[in-house]
Image: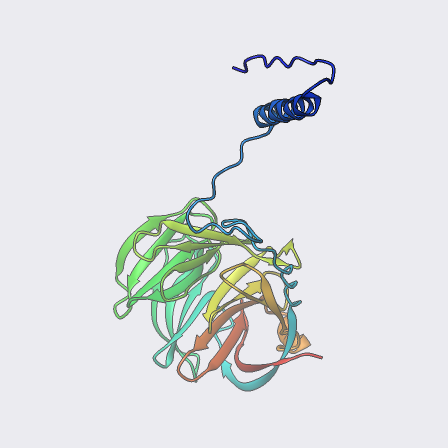
Length: 301
């Protein structure tokens, strides 16, 4: 509480100059007290706080981040052509130890296969029950993991015997499947990729695939290649190259022209990507295609 300060003014006489000085001093003291009571409190600097310039803990101004580079476009060159079963409705494709593993679709025709690369001969086959429509396929820890389309069911097989080891469930459709060495990566026909624990199949994270901020949907068969996810875009001759950390499309691969016009009359869409990580070979095919192609990619002007 402030106590009233009384200042008596008297005419200047005798010690008039002294009285004026005392009056001014009293007025100054009163003004200081009023100012101290009305001003906002000033925080005491903490240890280490900057006393000059930017206060400690405040964000340092930085330049705006550069916009991501636009997606690159690629064309291809054919290195080798191999036979492929034209009755195989290819949904998933994996290369390992000199052979291909293939998941085929259609109700009553779905299967898991081991296929000779050079001849296209089916070396081993396991048929799915007629109610299951086979989809994407991944090889992880000597287990083949296969999706089904609308059955919400996945199968886990022994790599050598094709013995069924486990079934598991998921709430979405099943389209493509691959892995990055740590997680399974799954597509469901939307623009979303889901990263799953390869043993419990619990979803660890999701990412939406976009190009220039727009979602890229209809993602089908997947293959993880040198830090990127390659994905067939259903009903097109395009493969997208995806940064799995952000979902951003970093490249588009145009695979039109692989089949002749005559071959395309009996074939369905492009679908099937496999990669030989040791040999650096990239293989592609399609549903009901009579050929499987080994290709290399090159930037398209």
